[in-house]
Length: 435
Image 1 (tube, helix red, strand yellow):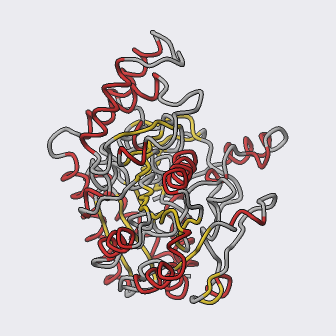
Image 2: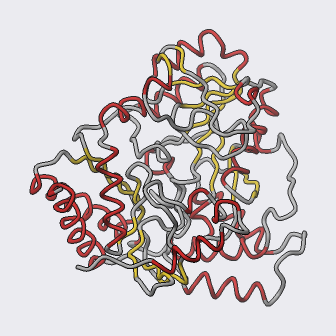
């Protein structure tokens, strides 16, 4: 195998930096290990192609949205047909009804829905909804869980070390960007993940001021870290007991682990849930779903909410995902990665942790047992090895997430893709260990 040359990407990035802040449109576009991002020309199926003519098997999938792969024909057809009719009316359409009804049928928590445009927006709306319904203003969130980039949402989403997080019994509220209001965290309680005792103690003292708990049902942004057995059920029981709403942030898990999201996968139904990313195959689109009495606490707002193009993309995406065998096949492919990396760990004598659920695959180096939360992950994970590994993969045409070990599969991936990926991974691990 020969390593890729990406000189044209480097040159384009140097030129772009003259006109665009940091030379990229989003921080997601620069891997942690890289001096410059790879500039892509197009994508098709499970592959991306760069300006130097290199082909990549891609497991980032636009950081989650491309569950059907790149340029899915069914979605392209639906969007092109809608564009021929108009891209924005600021009026309802028949398709608005069709999609709304369909979502209430497939999402367990959805008695009614509201449209938004992004993951950040749906979580902002969900928090406002919870406060409007309960008349309370405090929100409970978890260390390491990401709910968007707005001021209140971007609190304690990550840490470089356990010490930065402070004492477990009294965690720090970490502000992550310049310009973020110091008061952003005033109405938040930040607590550790997978700890029911901690949550109940908090509720005993402060439930009368807590509107809601917001959580990723699978900790994916700073993970994947699975909920402990019975944890989600325990959180659901406690929130009901203390009259606190439960919000599932399914921006990542929605449609990825099951058609009805993680709430279907685990059989735990929240009061409110949020969806974006995979719902519309790369088109900006989001949904808040929940109990009717809660959802009717606020009026709909937003210029582009439920726009015709996003609606068409969402309907086409869901139709593809509803085809028999879709999730069984996705689970089979992530299972192949799971088995393959376990064998590579044994072959090379290194500790490897893997898990798979639906179209999501977790890969860590440095430990083999389940970790409970971000603190434990920071203590055990071999981050340096993983960064070298991901960089090495990209040099041979395989794209993994450079943050943590979150890998996505699409319906366009094939068994041949998986086998080739494992062959490249074998070589890269060998090269790292040989140095």
